[in-house]
Length: 299
Image (tube, rainbow, N blue to C red; front, side, top):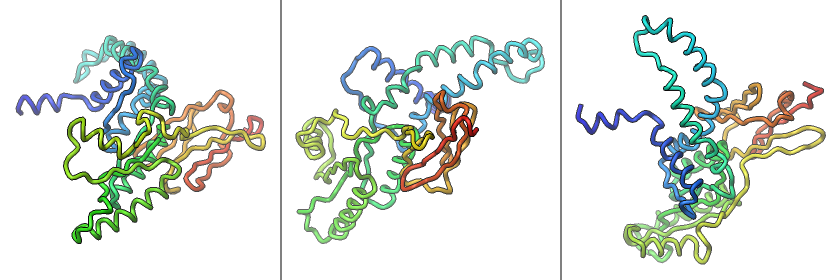
């Protein structure tokens, strides 16, 4: 195995995402920049990046301290017989230090006045479907989407017969995108005559997308979920656009709800007031999952 391949394979899964989060936390705490822009990878890797803080918090709250205590007791007895080296306490201390350095980054990621996502799509059937899925999963992880950018639109003045069908198809998909994602702003970027490289072309792209608007301004800030009180009961209202009812699984743990869609899941910590309340009903209406909690006296 070559040195380059060995180095790539030695990177632990998730380490790049963790390093990215550490830098974000550092830059925000130090106020190093006015705006931080993350050019995220395709949907799956972006979701792994977004879900890391909640996954690590769940591990630290539910498993870490128990595992560390068990290892302290078991290690001296099992060490002579274990086929692999058992982690010593410094391993757990390092994880704890990492967690402390990451702690708090989720409050920045989940605040729609601080962090928003802008989805970039093309006016093509499969790409639009992938963008719908990305939007659904971002809502699941409470990331506010404040705009959808439709990229590489053929300008209407292009009359070449070769592009006629493409132009007609794109117009139809743009209408679908506007319907699907309303009321989120839809920004449109034309297909330029050359690749967008360099400051001048970036300024031209910015002018096409934003006009006189400030690109750093939050364009739409609705939170993906909130609680409301109605008829003496609390209802959790969670926006899950483009989900299918049969693909949504809902579980209740002691102090949290677990919502799973396919291979992705989200842990939602329940407020103290609802810890003793059971789930009375759950329904999926339009693009919203409604979870109704029984009063404590009914539980």
